[in-house]
Image (cartoon, rainbow, N blue to C red; front, side, top):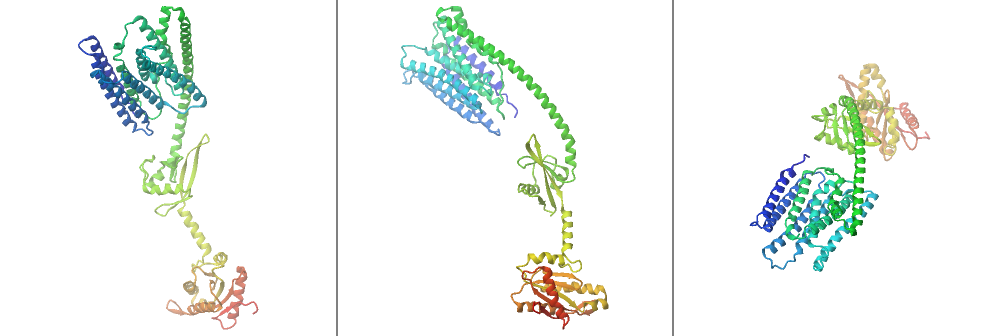
Length: 595
């Protein structure tokens, strides 16, 4: 997402206009400073509300929006708005029963809520050590804010004691408002609480220094000098919000503008004051301040050296990464032609099974416009659903069959997806089916052969309880008189008639020559004989071949299957059949062990 320029567009104009009006109010006695302050206050509140709503809408375009920050900031703005309304009512009607400090309390709460919103926005996951450090630093912050709250309550309950001047509270809030503007300068991703604590400690030293200097050099300092401090706070908040609007983007990157070594400068006013005054009673504070400043400068210098080393390491790492990326790109340039030119349709899928790229064969098969898959057509969705089931075969709408071959992609032991190849096996399967068909079917009659009978004999044991063996009578004479073509015609017609009148499809087999076998299902011997007699009747019908009526009959031997194997059953049926052959032929005989 391209960064906007809200900060450059709005803040300089706001700053210039505000300072012009404030200077005009100070220099021109006819212009009331309070009126100017009130006008600027409401204008700034309206602009901040507009900025917050703009940022809230802009966050909606992110994949992972973080809109709670802006809702909390809006709550802070509401508190400030209520405080401004109280100030306006007291200004217009001085006798109205609204406590003087009510606006100050609301403004203070507004700043603290806004600070909480900022901290909420930048919080990320921490390690145990970082949590411990954050707890210590948070304690410092709580103590600091607690002291401020204590002095505020003390001012409310005992105004005569003047433990802390009313002005110091306003200065504290002003400083916290300015801190809002500079927070992103000092807060880094790893140690945000620590840096905030450090900033607040130096901020308290800065406030104390301002108070000491003002009490000594500006004894006439009064609340009238602080009229425009709320405007400065609004400007600081506006700057922070505008900077945020310009940096609404995916990720949590931070931009460091000012180094932390500048923090000790906040202690300079108090340090100079003690050095100039040379008050013996405050020599210890002077020494502590001096050591604190020196320590912070050394820490900042050490930190700078570490950062320089880190930048050098990062530069080396970036160089290695760039070199590695070049190597990977060169490898890709070598692999891409292999991928695109592979004769089988091939896809590149990610870990979730989403298709990313397709080679030329896949583009032709699924009518894809380019190697990169941006839109998945309907036919391809069916293929992807098949892949989700971990199937090893796929059949398209044209009934072409493909074998699915997956090639996993692993980089440093991590799965990065896979290549999927669709190998066309339509012809191979058709050949296999033809081979299997001829292996189990008679080439002349297209019914089952002996191998098919061996397969079905066991599989259909409970379904078919009899085996019949059929041998044609008079077939040799037809062959001798009319030739083998006529004999083949008779065999084909016999197979058709047996198939047509059998009580189960696929139960007729040709064993060779003019010998056939049938698996039969019958409830008893009487129904068995009735079925076999029906076969004899149909087989005796003339076979018309080239205008000639050819006559053949059949002898049938039948045996019960029981638990005997195929060879035993065939021998038993053969014995029964030859009893008919040696007698009258054209009859049925049931095998009996006692005959």
